[in-house]
Image 1: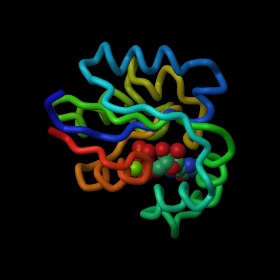
Image 2 (image 1 turned 30 degrees about the vertical axis):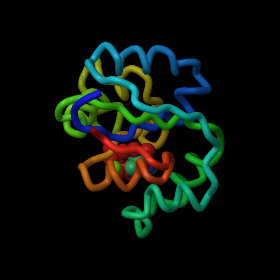
Image 3 (image 1 turned 180 degrees about the vertical axis):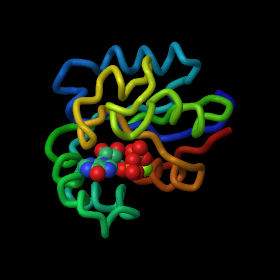
Image 4 (image 1 turned 90 degrees about the vertical axis):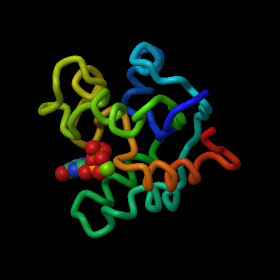
Length: 139
Ligand code: IDP
Ligand code: MG
């Protein structure tokens, strides 16, 4: 599997609404290949580390509580320009602002419950991938 890799996380609201299959199908149909996938229930500490860049923001506590409230699905996706292209596929942070046809537009409920996470740069992709998967290397 060649290309760049990035980390996706399907958030609790999308799983609870039964949208997991449609989201994974959209990811594959957009040219991404799945290199690893795992369902897990994050601890508070794991969610705090994932979102550490936001620790001083007013929404941090609510975000951490939400992301550790129920299972999520972490996925390593691979494609040329995966980091940038995956952000385009998911759309803007607020589903209300996201472009038509994006995952957040289709499946996001609120700004917090916006269906999916995607790493915002290559450095964060590597850091976030290491939080969920050990021994993964891009070839
Ligand atoms: P991103 O997920 O598009 O990279 P970030 O600004 O990194 O957006 O924020 C991380 C996550 O925190 C968002 O996906 C969203 O779930 C949540 N979030 C961001 N801003 C707010 C806010 O103002 N209120 C509540 N939740 C927020
Ligand atoms: Mg972000």
